[in-house]
Image 1 (tube, rainbow, N blue to C red):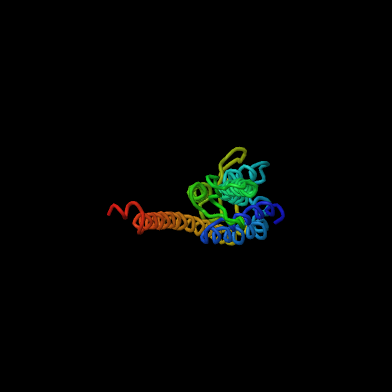
Image 2 (tube, helix red, strand yellow):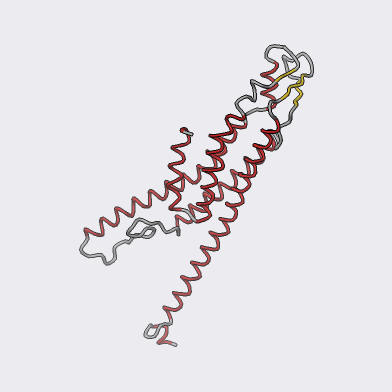
Length: 247
């Protein structure tokens, strides 16, 4: 688990700058993907090549058959999936930290100015540094979610194309240097199938949460825009304003 510590710390910083759905997504990423992969998957897949038995003694045949059946091991595939899926969130975190630092300097400048009229005010953060997801930050957040949807879908399709969703107990291989059609038998195929299905379900749940979050963000943006327009209309028709006087 030590090798995942740095990534976990970075993702943990995004928690306070995400929506409720985004926080649930990150919890699933921590608990059901990173922790499970670090704690159990390596033990289950540690013998996938060493315990694979083929009905031939031809040197190199077992290695060739393994390479044919598994172009990339499940562990490395899932590791790449986690890294790629987490990358858009880390890019969003970089944008957030840049905005926080920029507006912190802006507040320091405002404190030193005697006259604040006409000065540019912080737009995305309050005095406590809490971020309001709107404008460019909302666009950045939505972009990160869309990219996660595309990456998650691509990895699910890639897993199906490379291995399918079941660990086949027997594979047949005719590649050189195998002298004939060789049959190889996998170690603990049922246990590995259960693990594959579990990781697939977690991937699908994460994908579903990202899709739900997109609709949530669209609704959130529409609601804020509607509230802003309503407030503007009320201001226009307040007693004493120019528009109300003309009426």
